[in-house]
Image 1 (cartoon, helix red, strand yellow):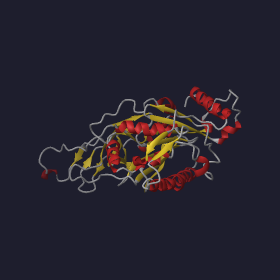
Image 2 (cartoon, helix red, strand yellow):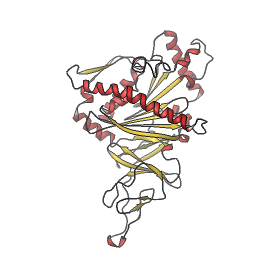
Image 3 (cartoon, one colour):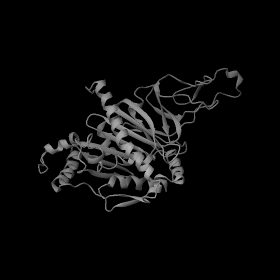
Length: 373
């Protein structure tokens, strides 16, 4: 983040500090029907959106070298993303054109992609390389994997799960002004995991959209490090960015206008619709992605940790960080969300309320509703 932008945001944080227990606010409270999280008809529309809209699948470090590939999920489909020998990124359905077998799992490096069922091979751009016993198949070997729109920019890879969808040239919708200076293209994927929990997929995003819960839900884990006030929020198109202030900022005089570095005192969260949260910590980046499961009461959650280039941190340090971030969100945020999901099926309430101190949460749901419409 550029120095002038840090100074501007730090001034806004300090204004809240001088005011006391203040934070950026929305214009009014917002009521959201609980059916938003339980209605199967709504879920069906959301599935269509998540299966077609441009979606973040990872940072560039997902494909760290030429001739690398990774298997990702876009909507409900398995997708292969590759980086060929000249660095170009491609995306295609993970479906062999012979009998429909999935070709890859996980990630790795390969000169060609080989189907494990009958051995058909494909170049990294998805074109057919060879068919075993080609003489038994009529016609020219023209079957290629079905390609998908893919776009790499500012170290972020986007894929649309519909071959007919066009990814715009500015999918970040203005967020690149802050994200580009971080040079995310140089970050390495340290580890990732995917698990399923009994919550609606949107609840996994909701938990990152406000700092209000930190002092209670995370009283023994995050609260000693991060304030639940002094947050700032800005919308960037349908996306949004929230800054949570770390308690190290207490060492700065809020009236002192000479301080110009925000990053040592901030956790920065970008909400990239429809289903991704990108979090910049002081020394690494976290990526959370949420997708619907079999019903409105189930979500598939992916968590990834990316490390900066030339980091002096040890592998043991990163492993401990990754274990901690998964543990805290799973045992505290997602466990609480499971109880929320159960409550939505009772007659306790027909709507939930997002306060004026939760502007990012309000913006996320308005953006999602806009996309669905």
